[in-house]
Image (tube, rainbow, N blue to C red; front, side, top):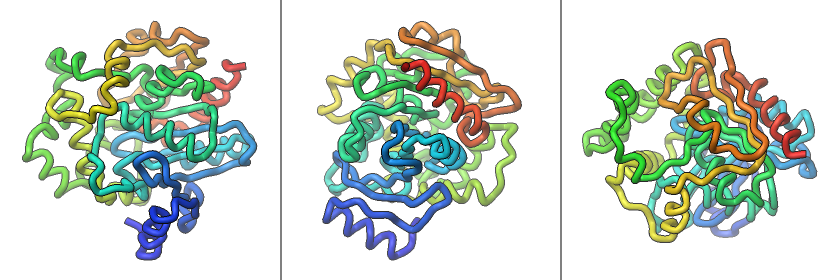
Length: 325
């Protein structure tokens, strides 16, 4: 997905474990650092001594969902970190032997490892889609590392047990791609048509967002990651209990299966035109036991809320910090 020089730089980073910048991207220089089982690619903006904010993307998106948000927050004095999740962009596994695992607790563990590598003791953590689930998990299981939370679509922590329960037919229909990915045909189809598939998801998840070809292609480059398809397929198969996770995450998943409450200050957001499967705000409000505010963002805002309504997402980060005071 990057130039030959970028690939060489990434290889050197894995060997050295140092931090180095790739060529300037639209969201800022993309840096690399060894963290846990990964060499993580991340964008960084704002003063290093500012309040740390970690912003997490979902599927099928990438760090460019936060281009405007990162710029706005940096302008307000925040220290913003936007990492590529495992299977996206320039993030790579350090070992070929590591399982390409897409289970929910693995993503959260990745971000804790990144915080350790960057020496960030505590951060405001925000996210949408997979990123919101990851942020929720960190807030629930590592509250001491989470100053405040911003979560699009609220409480998304799940379990294999809970996912065994059938939904109403219309709700099941909305998860069509999860059933497609459960088949070998689906895996082959996603491998062969990754960009076309993900563009379709962008369109259906945000039916009123008229994004340009260049906007999509900017993010689509991150799907060229060699582990992308494996991570996506495993993620959705694991949710349905069709694929096993790794034993080192069993204790975390046991805690998550209990539906832990979130006690840190939190702001949840929802777009009024979210075409992706998502819970209603009333269904998860009781999960937030600390200071808590919910906002539904109007104006045809879909699933990729940080990109579609960056001012609202930025305001939510500021509001979450105020709740933490």
